[in-house]
Amino acid sequence: MVKIAPSILSADFLNLQKEIEAVQKAGADILHLDVMDGHFVPNLTFGMPIIKQIKEIAAIPLDVHLMVSNPAEYLELLGKWKIDYVSFHQEAENHLHRQIHVLKENSVKAGIALNPATPIETILPILPDLDFVLLMSVNPGFGGQGFLPLVYDKIKRLKEFAINLNPDLEIEVDGGVNKENTHDLQISGVDILVAGSYIFRSSNYSQQISSLR
View 1 (cartoon, rainbow, N blue to C red):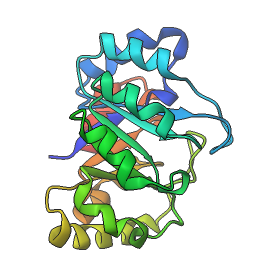
View 2 (spheres, rainbow, N blue to C red):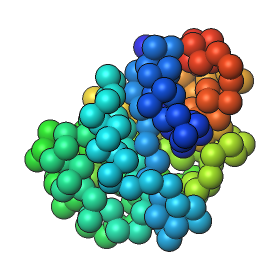
View 3 (cartoon, helix red, strand yellow):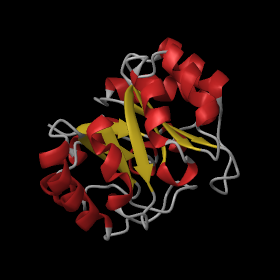
View 4 (cartoon, rainbow, N blue to C red):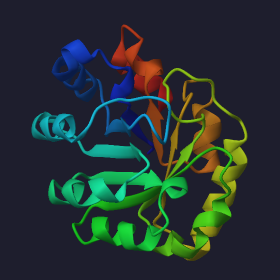
């Protein structure tokens, strides 16, 4: 069954612990944390101290998505903290293999994130080393954007490559996910759906999460 990962970027940060507890109770499988530095993407969110505090209270796995220009500076500490999933952008790192193994040496699930216009072929040499791939279905930087349909073809092609190179690879999609596109995403081969505003801007988190399944 597909895993649902609410993105706390859309949560009420003045009541963040309550929001986390609420989505966990509503049936979330994973908590998705978007780290933005204001350089790689035109927005600034939160950093390592917030991640550490969330790790201390979370009852479900954490999925840290690094939208930063210097991911290598974050990976060792995230590995030490045993964050469950960590992804960084192919577009921001020249030494993908080296940094992937910084995570894997700490038993962290290691992933590469791709912007909508970045071809799948750019990560084929390291696909066997990855635990998951995060496909952005919006241009990263802000929540609440509309889904880009071009990602469907990328999902299907990634799935085809994974069958031969890495059958256990998980495919994650982030951006504009809602009840209108969840069915097509799942039959295309998605394993993890990230949803922010669709869940947190609702008055019934459980209903929204169930609708995505």
